[in-house]
Length: 360
Image (cartoon, rainbow, N blue to C red; front, side, top):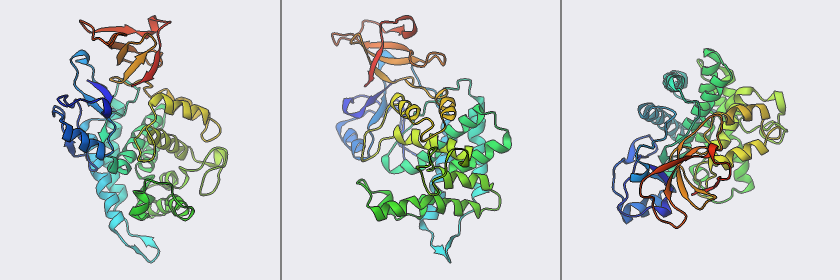
């Protein structure tokens, strides 16, 4: 399979990976043959990238961070909980929330079991979902990324759970916002921006009211928009005043937001997002944490279509954690635009004059 922009998809091509709805259910399954009506509908749903079958990339399959069944269960839990909170009224100044600790503790435990079992520490978030489900899948992706960071930091079981619960619930304050702000595709007004920024404190208050969730987890909600140089909100905290859990969640939040398609901008490629994070080192985020984070992210994930300096088009076939910028690629188009008679691969570590120019 290979990952391509939807503008490059032709009728008759088949999906290689499913497209997910808000609750993790499948909108279109793997193997579905795409026609123009399907393609147009997917564009309307805000989907810009797809995995498609391709004989020249047979056998190339990106590894997923967690099992499909784990993702489905987690997505469903996040979806139901956030929708319940969105539908609730605020009573006497406080939100009556469901039992968040009991609900999410098992979900995070299942995620961690999947992450611990992984032999490959390079994370590739491969799932494609409709744009309206961004809030739900974003919370799950941030949890996965934060869990990987916690493992890399050598956190014990209690620390992993505190971080994980905070990561899963870090944006829960968004449920207090009017839906017209959540779904707005143009710039927020100053008054709307003020209201939006309240989600950090609202989230903190929702989580800290739970008797079985650590107050440190609640600080992930409160502090995930604080910045290392004091330019963040709500309290303009600096450096070590921001809890490490919140710093980890903030890095994961920004990375997944940048690499997701949004109505008001194009998605960043993983390599572009990592460049942004490094540029923000010791300004927005602690540089040492960014270095740890980036060690576990695939810059060119398997199945990514790339253009080489030779003019050849290739698909990433294999990543080497010791040379993340120099993956092994499979050639699918020669410089003259023809397909090779038989698929062949090039290890870019061995071809010093050949480089990736851009992702396609």
